[in-house]
Length: 226
Image (cartoon, rainbow, N blue to C red; front, side):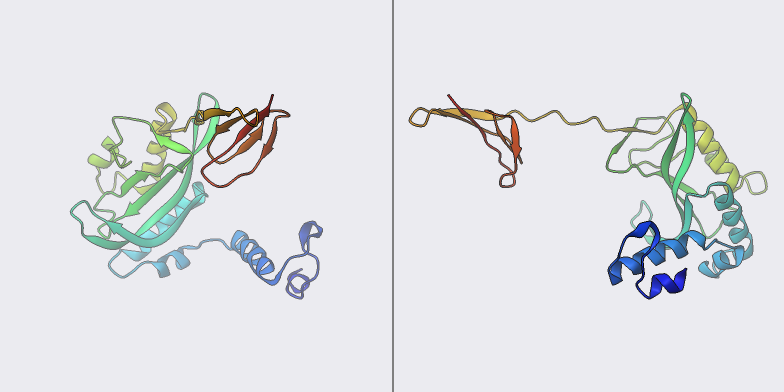
């Protein structure tokens, strides 16, 4: 199958792809079949971590929460200092009122883990907005008793994620943004032409037949012959 794809033949679904599209398609396919192992995770971790222990914890967590992906990234602390830390970014499944939702989160694992608790954030997408909760700070940081009372041996990464799922299922930390109301336009009449002009953002509608027509960015025009 890969030889066929690489030589430019038809790919799945019968579509023909450009070279770039075929490369992206192959990357997605390879990414979907490549699974994380404790060894591959351990290689990502610098020696400042307890590498074998942390790699095992991350492997277990990503086995249960398959939408979380590990990555080394830059974390900025509240005092302005920055450090490259291991993170788990993605979504965790939460059931609320009988429906399943994927809540976007980021869990930062400190170098002192498991002695030190992870730092957790809810990361709403542009379509979402944060819901004010007692366990959320203004910037989305998750503040739970499980984290405040963190104790090595009693607390771990998978336990933390399970607590977050339970709490978010009772009190969802995000909601979808409401659709914006259509902005009102400004209208005036040109008596000489007998046309009513109304300016609206980003679209033009001909009121005589209701047809939508594009116009220059930032303005629109309603016209009606009478």
